[in-house]
Length: 242
Image (cartoon, rainbow, N blue to C red; front, side, top):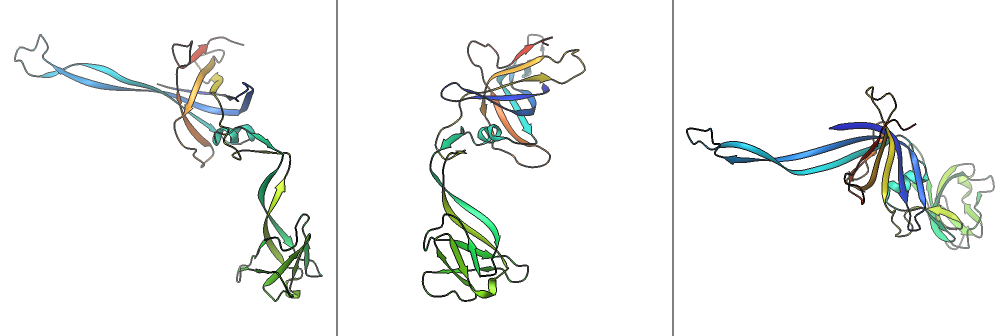
């Protein structure tokens, strides 16, 4: 069985705060595995061993959720991490800048001799430049002082890519701390001509069953639907709900 629908993934943090993701498409599938049982049916006159029945040995409920775009709550779900506000965190910064006429770049926040990586892109001769701590830079060198990177005169008006570490304050992060998301659930509507009003489609609890697949028009994760008390089945339909 397969059911298609659309709706939102809901997540809860440790304080039971609810986060709602973007609208997503969902494909809900029930996979039933059977085991054939050999036996001797009463009406088998020759006594040959044959299959008399089959038993359901496993029934799983999987839901594949796909989305074509992301916001912060979607990325938090992808990485199983709740969004955290960081008051002080060191992160790498990368910028593509043009060296000024006086052979310098102004970069706010740099300290004297701070480690900075500089790369000069080129279709024919790309170069990783070398940072020096004393003296004047030669053609492929640079030095770092407070808020300034100084190059050789040959680099004036040329484009460089710089990388350095910077302390950020009051920004939202995902993955900076070990703070996983809480329960996942899904609520949406069924798609199909059989229902004059698309029924409410609710999965009370889901757990991740696959990695995250980037590619094509959508990005997908497969979840295993699980039973959560007091529900007897891991899926609820509410028909004719406006």
